[in-house]
Length: 444
Image 1 (cartoon, one colour):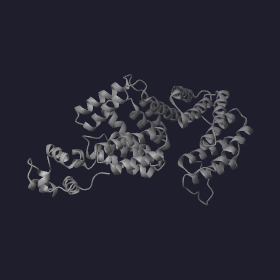
Image 2 (cartoon, rainbow, N blue to C red):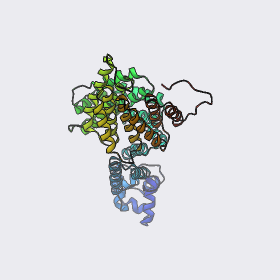
Image 3 (tube, one colour):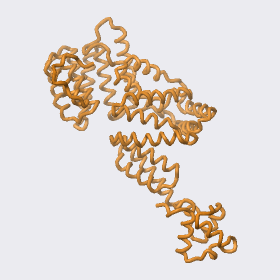
Image 4 (cartoon, one colour):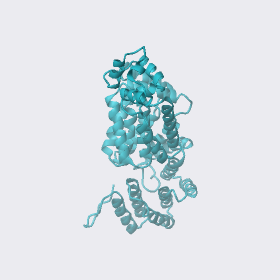
């Protein structure tokens, strides 16, 4: 922990502990009245005086100045890095505890800033989104108060992602568009920031059913320049420096160094590819194969399939599963039903009970292929199993969307009762309650 009080109080406490008078501490170099002024907080010692006092008090000048020894600061630096490693290893709980302790104990502004960012990220990964929003908002406010030291872009992108997670599409879109504007103004059309801002904005547009805008954005953000990422960051840093945006210039200079190694940012670009593919697939054709003659729909589905295949090698975990599900969906829409069935069945075979929602989503796309193949009995068996599993999941916007898709597929398979139940549950999962009056409208 930092030592108590200010410089003067630490000098006085150590002097009394060492049983020295003010005159003894002053020696022949200083006056006892000057020591008295330092201890009362009326004078701030120069670095030279601090070193002299530290020698006589048996401590370091850093302790007198900041209240913390160099070894303690180094220890906190290591703990902050270990917390970052815990985050990277998918262990946000212990990381959060470490970050909070570093924040409490650190007197170093830069270390505290890194720990606060890590704390916000850990909260998001733990699913404590409201708390994460509060933490990221504080970081954004800090960057706006001190633009010469801190970039505002990372907090803006993180907030767009968090607001999207809680269903505040207006905020998510406003922040996502702001992030892309900031990047565009600096001429930066590549890199993880560009990919993540584009991905979140694509998903928000789709959730708002603004499919045309989502498709346009998907094509726009994927037409990245051929400039290497590190060089693009360097150019953005130079441009930010020329415009006086020192915080952005520092941020992108650091990013240029971080991403100099070949292949950096490939996973972020792959996730962006999935989001763009989803935008292309949304609203294409029917729940069966794309009818002949709808060349635009076929082209969109084929374009999505190319994006998904390009993204797949860089993905793991939930993102890889999402890529497989969307790949099977694209195969259905272009009429390659046997391949779609094989893709979905292979995905199901590799999923364990911990992937409950992923199992439901994969069953739905498999049922979609079976309906298109006119195997309605097998499709209905899958849909009923999916409906049973869906009932055991916690309500969320994503679960509501899956329940709505389930209703559409029950309807396509000829089970009106199953469709009605799924639509009603979609409303409940979304936090709504159906009216007691008969409903004839279909969800869109």
